[in-house]
Image (cartoon, rainbow, N blue to C red; front, side, top):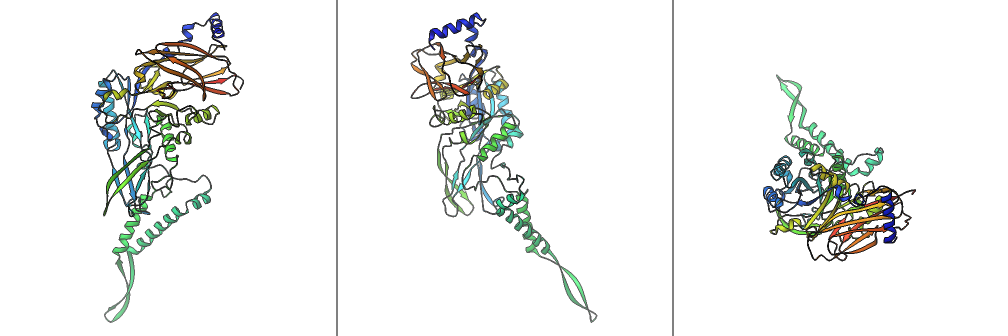
Length: 516
């Protein structure tokens, strides 16, 4: 569709009573809030205390800051089959050691002390890890300890304290109606439980025994019962009693730190729990590989443990119903680039396979930088209905946001990205769906330049296809038309800034065509 035809269509809409300012100001219906996500404090190993962080954030120009210390940093290795109680543990500072109630209350107090910025308590959840190797052969490896998700929007300390994890428990395998199959599939576990109960009752029966003895009283032989106490049987009774206590409710665990392979299951358990609590949950640094070695003291031995976490972009498609993922800095290799895993998940949403579309955010992961300008190096810009925590949560949940990196958010502001049906005048904004749409569609983009000498490219994608490329050198307010007839029932549009090195990405606008 030519620009002339687009103008004719817009004039037709004006004749029908619509006004061009109204058509071009969807973004102005919202407050644009600049948010920083993922700050770590001394609560869980960061360099700065919570008050110091709050002071830095207040001077940074951010409107919103979400502090996400680790919920727990405890790992345990047990001697099987007694691993529930015969084990050693390593634990570092975390919200669990700081206490969730103290953590949330302190951030809430700081939020009231700095009215210019909204401080929000959150969590960097550590739900799962597993061991490879053995301390006996000195090749112990701790895997998946740095596979994390960001959780916020939950402000009840009791709910935070019970986030599913290896430390808190990840649930039990339960029968799905076929008891026989269930027992057979877990025959080793139930065989071990039966052995524990047998040994417990046998040793308990042997603690006190009655023994018949022949006694000579006045040269008359009589049989009397004598009570005999067995210290060894008592010790074994206590031992197996403790074992059974730690095995309650005697069902096999769904996931343990001794699993042979990693699965998405533990993370899906956390996602489901957060959704039940009406919280928000995002995959953190999904394309980062973490490797280190650490000296640990194990009883009767000392050795170096390797701590390895491979990048985990596959969980973007292997899990469902999470709120989104961090596209910056570490999500543009295989996830966020056009045609990547994000597009697979979005296409599944369009096809009805997924109930929720995953949203992209910018993640800061600020821990110990001496350069305080890094606080705004990665940002998420929210289009909020109100400047409150509730308004911020609603914007995240709706996907009304875009992410920036490399201080792009300090140079340009995206004020509007909307799509209009020229037949009905209906429109959709970032994160929304234009329903019952008909071609042609009109796209509106408006950027405001905060600095001079800007020279970058804007790329608009229709699904995974580049639809339009524009040069951005300053303020921009443009209309574009899409009159392509698609066979697909639902399509989506996204906006990228930067071709070889994207520094701004919006969440998609979905278009559902009429009669399909």
